[in-house]
Length: 110
Ligand code: AMP
Ligand code: ZN
Image (cartoon, rainbow, N blue to C red; front, side, top):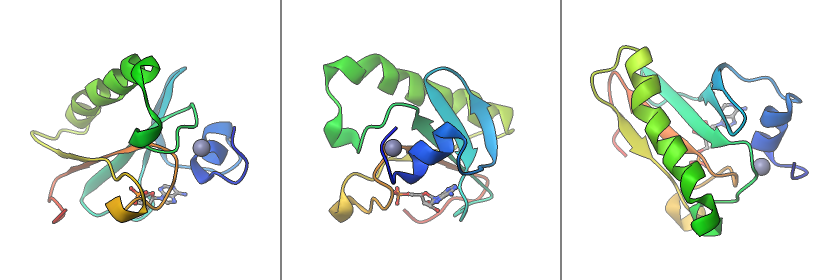
């Protein structure tokens, strides 16, 4: 766990979240400020600052996160969805712990 990382605190259970899925590697929770009817975040339990911090060692984890998107979207009854990964301040990232946004049911203009 990285001190002062919001998502690490959620992973540790120190901050509550509206969690919809969890396994050994990832946690999924609803975004606190949803930009669509359905808006959840797929978050690795491992602290990785952003996609830029990833390398070949994280390939399986990244693949797992992406494959979870259609599975969880399907469970929410979505026929389609949008994914987003903001990387770096210039890329619109605000929480510096890697996460995949999944939007559905009325899509945002991102
Ligand atoms: P990003 O701009 O890609 O870093 O997105 C960070 C996202 O985290 C934003 O959509 C926030 O609304 C969301 N967020 C911030 N704090 C929380 C929280 N405590 N629980 C759930 N989502 C959060
Ligand atoms: Zn973290």
